[in-house]
Length: 497
Ligand code: F6P
Image 1 (cartoon, rainbow, N blue to C red):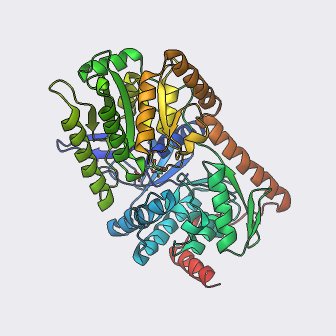
Image 2 (image 1 turned 135 degrees about the vertical axis):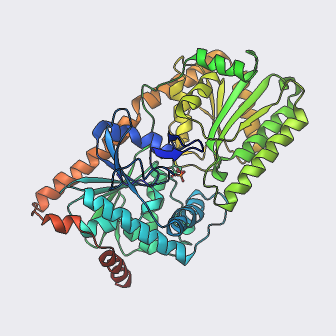
Image 3 (image 1 turned 135 degrees about the horizontal axis):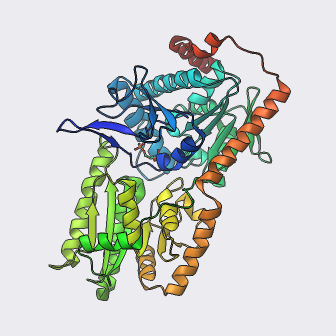
């Protein structure tokens, strides 16, 4: 498994103690159960201040600490190179490009060079780890070039690239300066996965438009330079049954926040990212309170916002804009004993998040655009008593499956305000019926189904390949040695051809 974000980082505190930190990452939430179940190696970038001393000489350790179910292989990079790859090309380039969130993407040649170099390092690490005919799972937009690099070095490995964010339409994608190289890199995979069928169709269209390849819409496949890539929708999900906190824990939290029992609490759980629609959400709450004076003192929105990617200016701006927006609403409507919006901007453990779900009467999940959004599914899964309302953006992949949510256009504050009000006033019977329909959906499409489907498709590809080209054993060194220089010149040669 190649995924940039490590599932556990070791941080040294000021008092000298070392703690294990969990990142606020849908990807980690989604993928970790698979690794815990099947074992294997997670290859990730080291980010913790005490990561080195908590790994062996080769950067490896068994995780989670208590059960040691799989291997974490940490990689270290030159900080400037990593910054260009992660903040630069990945998060100032591909992230806004794919989310179409009206933030202009930045494309810098030096960031692209860093992206190529770090993709190369991850591919080498994956090849070292891969047994003949092994399965390699590559996660996300940080690693578009990895599948092709792996194919070049270990042609018998079977590779899946899963793209966790949206894939834009071909015109939007067309502004990416290195679009051909990116597509070619991805088409080294045997299977490319997205959350929705629409993203698959956008991807097929982009390949058809920009590469000389054969797209088969019937089979949902792309043939490029003699290799076939299947393009499939695999909507990611959460564990089922879900380890919910109890309503009693929710009540305890409510008391500790000083919120009376008869006040309606909505909850929002997000990374503090401009794609999450947080400013728009606060504006919708403001509008609702403006139009419904009776709700003042009777409603509270608790917003958890985990700081993220703070080296990027847009994220710093978002954090301060959000604080300002919340202060404005609280000043406008709040009283001595009541603030309508409680904003908690810090990292939260999964246990804390679950208590917030248990405390809430409804959840607001209103991103401007989101590949899937696992918070929506987590909230549904956590309502084990079958009661709770969900206000959900139509622009989250989750909206394709959770059709019984109150679906809104987050850009439309009046519509969003009306949906929040409806969630507050909804009769219990309707709330439970809608929640039951959503719970049925998540129960029958859990994270286990997601990984089982991907593994099933990869094994089918592997079986097919074995029938077509019986395996010749390679000299071990040929597989394990992956020379940076050689792969850089491979990329250059291929680009020229
Ligand atoms: O949604 C895209 C994504 O990469 C997720 O896969 C991940 O959970 C989230 O963004 C977090 O991003 P980062 O690793 O940059 O904190």
